[in-house]
Length: 420
Ligand code: AMP
Ligand code: MG
Image (cartoon, rainbow, N blue to C red; front, side):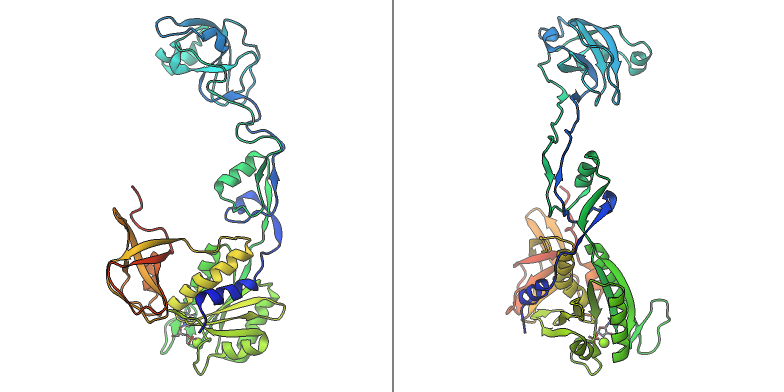
């Protein structure tokens, strides 16, 4: 048997980040940047007001107090998106809205709240703009301003290669005028289910048959991880069918193959026979449960194939451990590990002695994270994954975990009860 870590590192050795492509920025969230983004402008591009109020010369209002306000002549008004016509000369002010450029001559903004305008309803202010305003608080130079370049300076390296693009980075790209961005291509992941027992989802159940769920779970996992699923359908447990479907996947330009089933020691486990002759394959017994059998190798042309076990839970757990990191690496990510928390198990947990991935529900309590199992842990019980938000990891060589023990839990989703 090989360890989970050994299996993963052998897989990752044969997987490379894919070549770059230029995509519209709205297709880039979750993708990894390939280019350096250097700003050729300042953001904001001009000094502008952070408040609705009056643009003033701070020296004019240095002595203002609520008891002894300073009166200024209002010589104009400027809204966001416009430029003030006049200059602010001594003894004058320009009404200014948030985001509007600071008029020449002014060096600060007095918020409405600190002026006589505050006493007037908004409608009244709009209908009868005051020709004078009383300022009731002093301001210092640059008060209530957003100076040019405060956010981004001209020539600044804003985003570097390797950066995972989130909505905030998409916004930064937009503010710099980038409609397109260079990111790693998404892997096309060919998904192939194997087994004579499998029916398509629209087919009625028949004796001895089950529906093909793995193809859909795998396609959903691939999509969630950032890959593009290429569904090749069901290959029967017959050599020709499997060979032909794999060739079809190669013809469609698959970057990675994910098969399910046929990699254990049964009489009809043809994936093993076929892959053994079609490419350079290794068949591992990984020291984990669920998910002991795993195949990995390179098809003709060097396309990697991960042969997941057939049992739906084993397939999913193995996907998380092996296929997810491979897809993330192809996308250019360097952080390939699932987020984990430490949680106290609230019940005794049995383990096989191999590394156990126990389906649990993690909840946050006042004293930290707690985990309880989802019940029946059979590797065919897919609802155990559906109920779970985490996989509690039981170390190799452990057969019993007593209630109250702390385990590392790989989170499938974020734990319940994390609000306040
Ligand atoms: P195998 O490794 O091919 O013997 O498959 C192990 C178990 O997983 C069998 O009980 C299969 O019926 C089940 N299985 C295999 N492939 C699928 C699939 N695509 N969807 C649901 N169950 C599957
Ligand atoms: Mg099978």
